[in-house]
Image (cartoon, rainbow, N blue to C red; front, side):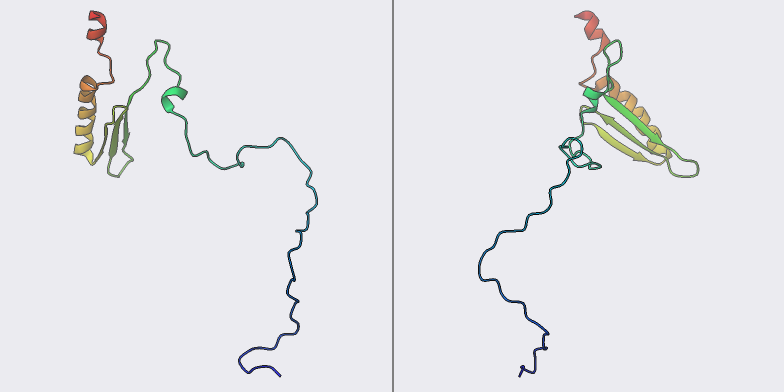
Length: 122
């Protein structure tokens, strides 16, 4: 007779008496070469854009970017970035115009920009 709090089971499987080897699956057919990463998985480390972007024929490459987004009927935004560590954002018409002027002024004081006067003097 069963206890009142426990439901009656139809059959209880026997408990294993010891370890047993795992069953081996069927061998799969190898198709193509092994891959280092799964397909469709983005690589966590992205390449450095300065080394992947080829320099211009005269050897110059970009170090500062000014991105302005002004869709019709919405508030304009802008971002000014430089490789020296500068990263400024602006929202609104007046502030975006001020950031454009500030970005142009930063070109004269950026430590990464080579000044043509200094090159000619050297």
